[in-house]
Length: 382
Ligand SMILES: NC(=O)C1=CN([C@@H]2O[C@H](COP(=O)(O)OP(=O)(O)OC[C@H]3O[C@@H](n4cnc5c(N)ncnc54)[C@H](OP(=O)(O)O)[C@@H]3O)[C@@H](O)[C@H]2O)C=CC1
Ligand SMILES: CC(=O)[C@@H](O)[C@H](O)COP(=O)(O)O
Ligand SMILES: [Mn+2]
Image (tube, rainbow, N blue to C red; front, side):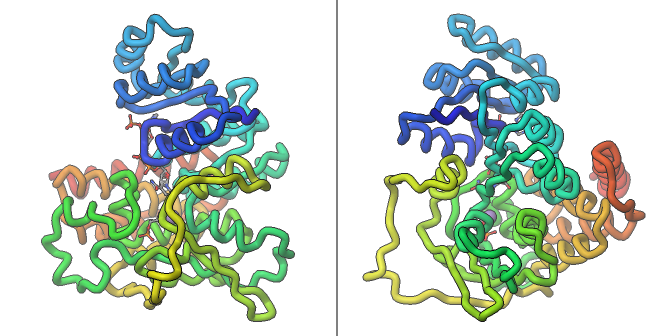
């Protein structure tokens, strides 16, 4: 029996994780959590009977307690609640499917408690990879990638000597605005930016795909997960998201992982690694798939990618500032408070303003996040 707890069970990754659970009879869900979607959390409690349900604030906790008072599920809230979920006894694995830096402390707690991590929450590794990766080694826990590109790379290097990796080739769909120039992006609206060409995902990551910030975050995530230099990572636009990523080895051989754009594949792979299981779902059809195209990313227009490379190279606390500024800028864009191109200006402004701190502690990471939010509020309060 696999025993899992899910941080962010009501979101895109969380609900697809539960679909994987439904297709397999040997996974037990010990805990679920959400920020505010109490209706969905109640449904999940009734279907999966977890020991624990965590929400973010006290009012939502009261609402959930009332709704599930006839069940045996304990309700907790706040960061303490997420930490209780992360270290819940009996769980073998925590699926980190929350969005944003809120995942840092629970992920660290889970690692310290010896839980394997099925990692979707890339923001945690981008900002605190230098803490989490050595900690995972110390506690002998596995960080198993869920992000589709990283799962693809993980599958490509299975059984290979890591020292023979020459280059990681991370594929990008290019997002809904691929091919457009800056002038054409000035007035794009939220609805256009949310129309991802290949994947159905939560709003924040969907906007990140449109700006190519997602790819930048994924470059940093890959660098931590696979212990490769940033300069050994290349982004390749592959518009149909058929190739999920590739690895080039020292002898020139390139391994690629292909499949339909279905996150249940990497989620299930992470849960059962190193084994593969049957999964229902559409297969690639090579009688209709007639071509696979590649493009070079347009980094002049989609500045999220070069800004991410800059953050990664400056290192220390700069990836935190890049990420925090992006989280706030995306929230402002989704709230119609700033335009699409302002996302780049906000990130760049915050990075220019920041004095890099080497090897930041968790407290310093969280301070850098708070300072970035304050700086944005003082410059961009509209
Ligand atoms: N969606 C995808 O296909 C992919 C996602 N990822 C990564 O996975 C992560 C999750 O993405 P996605 O599923 O799209 O995001 P969603 O926005 O769909 O889901 C986020 C989840 O986190 C919960 N949550 C948010 N804030 C808090 C909080 N403060 N306390 C407790 N729970 C909270 C949400 O609850 P509520 O529903 O109540 O708001 C929800 O369950 C992100 O880091 C993303 O980059 C990576 C690859 C693919
Ligand atoms: C499904 C997944 O892993 C996403 O991170 C996806 O990669 C987003 O697509 P883009 O390639 O458009 O960023
Ligand atoms: Mn991805």
